[in-house]
Length: 140
Image (cartoon, rainbow, N blue to C red; front, side, top):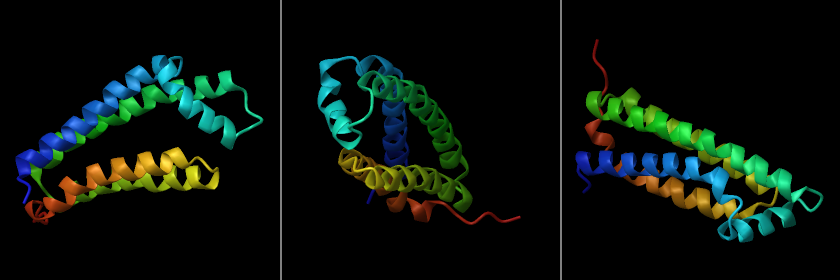
């Protein structure tokens, strides 16, 4: 069984990875590390301009970083108060991203996102599901 403190740290590390990754994304899109990803996107969108794709993915980085910052804060607050509503907020924030991003990716034949999103979703849901019992209904 996962302890509540391990779950909190695990989720905070994932949030920090989002922050760092989002801040690095505008730079990473111009490195050879990103070449296979952009080849995959070029296959999914053959009429697209490669530089436009780099810009769009790069500018998405700060959004990812911002989501990471907000999720980090939500984790801190949720694990302090541990109400059922807090737990559902964390689960909902994760599912809104995962379901919509994955559905749009699937509809546009961007298979890389299916694997990435699925992996990240599991990493978020494991600690949340294993600690659900620690989040109690709020009494008024």
